Image 1 (spheres, rainbow, N blue to C red):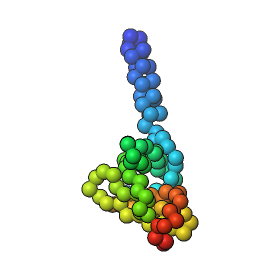
Image 2: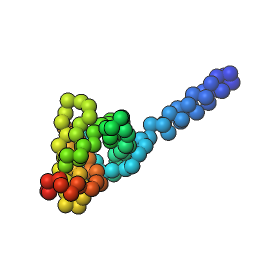
Image 3: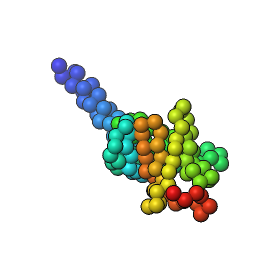
Length: 118
């Protein structure tokens, strides 16, 4: 019985470490995922670059994610992967609300001066 105790403690320690790594990193943004009507500060966004392209990866608290490419044509972002297209709408409060399938995200952003007004 005692021989199995160290192995059990090691397994418990590894499980605790993996839980800490599962917590998404990045800036918190409001989102309404899986068809929810209510926006909550439960998504995390990270910026990245690949060559000249800029991307935002949004991670859901429950583990899902979406990736967007930032564009300079007034739309703000477009879907970077997947079959679902993103639609974006600027609010008068300076928020870019992006919808993809049943998920919605609110990005604090600055609208370009020459972008179409809401």
